[in-house]
Length: 148
Image (cartoon, rainbow, N blue to C red; front, side, top):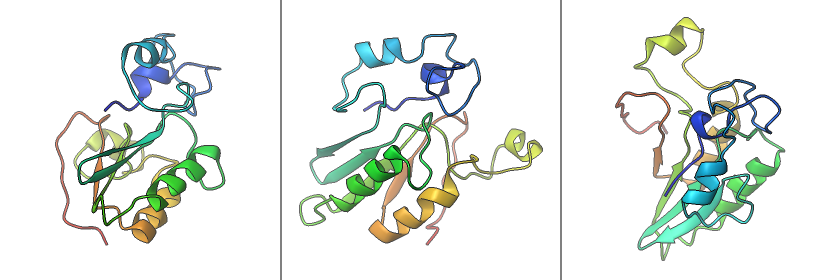
């Protein structure tokens, strides 16, 4: 499954939360048309899907996901709708990493987390007992022990 990232979406006035030019002006056109993903609104790139024992909630880290936003409500609904009897594993995935410790570039910027990420979503992870989270963006491998 695919998730939108900075190289797919980010461009000034494109609807991205980040007003940077990483997409080269593509603004997700290629990703939205070339890859299948079961999103109701393909321009938003967030969706839920089940596969065997897994319930996936795929978020679009390039749109605002702070509490009260449309995407935050989608993420909460996605996590809450998991039938843990059928899909005991609840997986969250997005492009931008919400918290990490191995990349000094972000430490130089004064943060080890994305500016809109952890504060808004961590309580949802705990409330709905997310089992695993997968991210891209930082081109390093990192894993952690359980965080709660």
